[in-house]
Image (cartoon, rainbow, N blue to C red; front, side, top):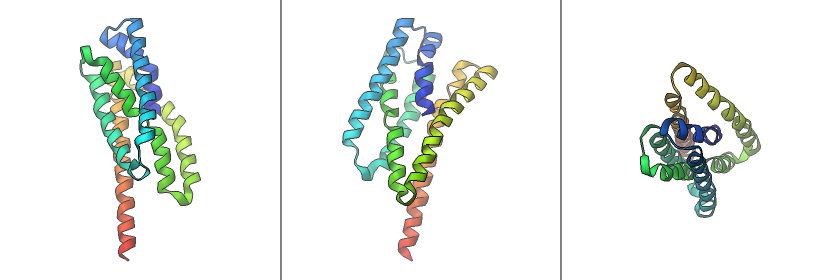
Length: 176
């Protein structure tokens, strides 16, 4: 949630300051991002089977690492709007799918797990901008953007490890 809110908050500034977009064209970039998010939620909501949510989450986090790295660290010139759309698409269903996956994985304590995630949402919305502002203070705005891909990478690793440990636990329980 912190990356989503952070992207919405800084995308126009990023486009104007680092890519010489005008005020109008940077706002169009934000609209393209939000359209990508809306379409992603609609599409993924219809085509995502419950038993494949974990694989879809890993794929979306992996795609987000690549797309956000390209968006913020490669000069994309004419395809910038396309990559902004892909950024919105890749991040669109991460939060709803994480909530769904948590409820499915931990059915016996689903309320506690979902409550923990809901508490973490505002923390991400506070910590990611704080971390970015700290990095901007000691380096540059462009360098601080590394926080977004690193956040996706951390989430990817945590979900992968959680899935791996859960499947190993189920295999060892089944063997006994």
